Amino acid sequence: MIYLLAFFMNFSNGLFLLSTPLVAIKEFQASVLTLGLLGTAGAATYSLSCACGGFWAERHGRARMMPLGCAFIILADCSILWVDRTWHLFFIVAWASFGAGLFWPSLMKWMGEKGEHEGLGKRVGAFNIAWSAGIMLGPLVGGRLYTMDYRWPYLLGAVTVSCVLLVLLRLRHTLTMERTTPETPAAAKPDGDIRSFIYIAWAANFAIWFTIGATENLFPKLAVSLGISAGSLGNMMGLVGFGQMLMFLLLRHIKGWHFKFWPILLVQIGCAAGAAVFLTSTSQLLFGIGFLIIGLTGGVTYFSSLFYSLYHHERRGVKSGLHESILAAGIGLGPIAGGVAATLWGLRAPYTVCLVLILLAVLLETAFFFSTRQKNREA
Image (tube, rainbow, N blue to C red; front, side):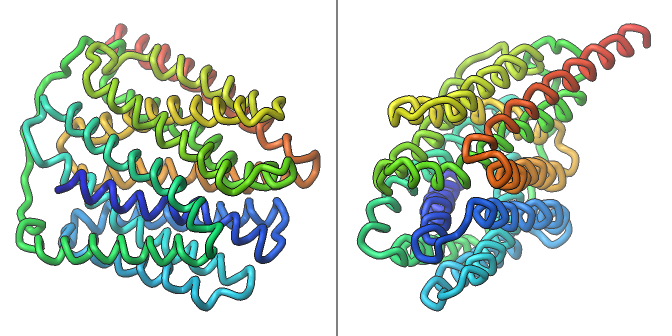
């Protein structure tokens, strides 16, 4: 049931993510800076909401937080019927993001408590496959609905989340049952201190999702200038979710990568290569490959960040909230930083910013990793 809820919630989110920048561009002639601000408003709200939602999940329980989050998202989606100004979009983006921040940390906490600790990797993998399938399918459906009427993707999203809400209300008694699993040793010999991998994974996740946030929010402007249709754009953006889902499926079964530094380092180099595609190409095929690459790399860092956040059983709600909060901070800062760069230096400039950030993250993570390992050897 947890995996179905994750799928349908992110299916709704995929509809929302594709449609909102297109509405801003085609209905209100939004500038690239406005697109950046719109993406940042949503991600900043989500980041703060997740940080709070993780604490509230521990204090008030998921049975309250998850239905409340759904209610906010339904309200935001239905508000599209009254949108006739650009600033109205900021309102519904913030409202939906606030609701999502209440929902996801509680669902992750629930997933982390569902079984024995040694099965955490498989549960995280199945959970990630479910939500990434939703975020992949959402833009594909949304791109086609948008060509009929720009309000239809939002209304379908409202119906979808309403169904999730009904399920949660029916499972209210189950949601109130808390379970804590015992802590067990790591399945693989770690390269360094186990807890330090939380911070390394959070940093890598921030850098890569900064790139994903900038690309998903700002590329539609470049796509429109190149004459790429809404349907083709939806297909390309759907490849991000496909790449994530593929990596989640592989990582769920591959052993030996846990508590290793090199996989996180390698995928950040791959993400830099994906950003370079958007910086230099004009081919729709290559753009699709670029979206796939950043989806693959985002899948690795997201899986790692969530796995390490849930590995130690203490305060899973808080750490899953921080995992999502840091992720959202990257998604939020990417559009605004990229939007400013695009305004000053052109529509390709955001991807230079992404490349620089990834390089800085790699350097900082490497320094932190070797410093921590040296301290452990001396201890």
